[in-house]
Amino acid sequence: MSKNLEHLARRLKDDPFFVACPLTLYATSEGLNEESLASRLRCSKENFALVCLCRAPAGEAESFQDDIDRMATKFSVDADVLAEAIRRGQAIFEMQRSTESAATLLAARDGKKKRPGDKGGTNP
Amino acid sequence: MSSSSDFLISREDELALHKRLVDGDVSAPAEIANIFIDGLIKWLIDNNSSKIPEDLCVEAAGDAWEALVKNPASFKPEQGKRLGQYLCMSAQGDLRNRLSKEGRRREKSLEAVQLSAKDGKYLETVDDPSLPLRIQEEAEQAEQGRLRIVGDGLSEAESRVYDLIMRGERKTAAFAQALGVDHLPKKEKTDVVNRVKNKIKKRINRGKTDDVQES
Image (cartoon, rainbow over all chains, first blue to last red; front, side, top):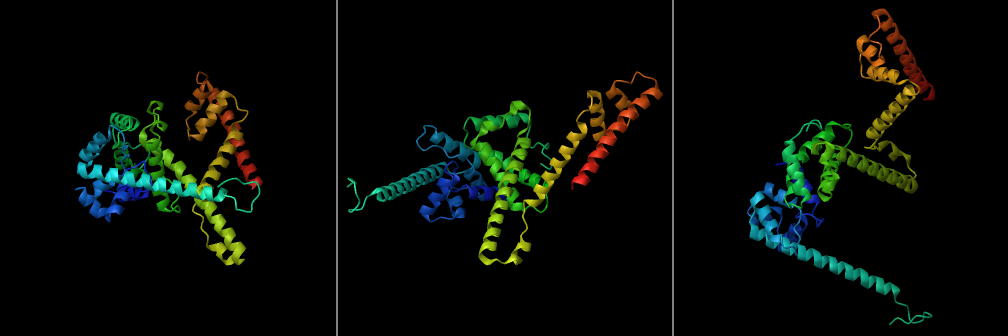
């Protein structure tokens, strides 16, 4: 198995298009490194890299379970653990994103607030 | 994939894999990476200057793979190109982009060194990794420009002779056929061919002289 595939998998860890992203977030939430996550998924390190290079199935899609089964069969991974890890990782990603959006909104609102002495402002 | 024409899977398998990618099969990107990525990196390393850092080739191969899996329709099998060839061309473009970016980054850091330290001793240590590729490209462009100038004003038949010369053809029969004079007696045919060849060779030499004068 090529180190290049492992390198490619690592560079995708922030890209939600690929399975690498939710698996990385899941691993972090569980305090796992790559090897221990591969072990939990009951797969080799090599197949772990290949799973990371798969397109992430949409969590809300009807085909989610079919997609999980396809990856699990193709790369000899535990389907239940994979499904749980991807769902949790995607949930964490969404939470992080909404937290960042809220923080951005708050910062924008604070920036718009007028000081008490400013003229013409009616904002609370 | 020592050359882009080395095909790692059959055309049928390749088309089926690409169709799965287009259809949104989640495992198709991994399978494509598994088949092509090592060969793609090797191809980039083999077909570019040895001065280009290997890690840039690795990243460029990754860029090309990522672009394909995110936009599968960018590869059009009906145009006759094989997937390996397409990935090589795409990765070569990505490598060029990465080299340009790297070159700009280095220029900026150079400016920063000049502005902050005003110390020229750092200038000599900079080794721009994009330089070999830029030189290669500029040489190719110069060559293409020169050949275009040589070819300007030639008749259609003379252009065919010019192409044959550039391809290293030496047989009089081939030139005679290109000029449409292969029906003439041998002596006459040889004279016509030599006249046209000399005309073109003079133009080529003139082009080279112009280059030297310009530089």
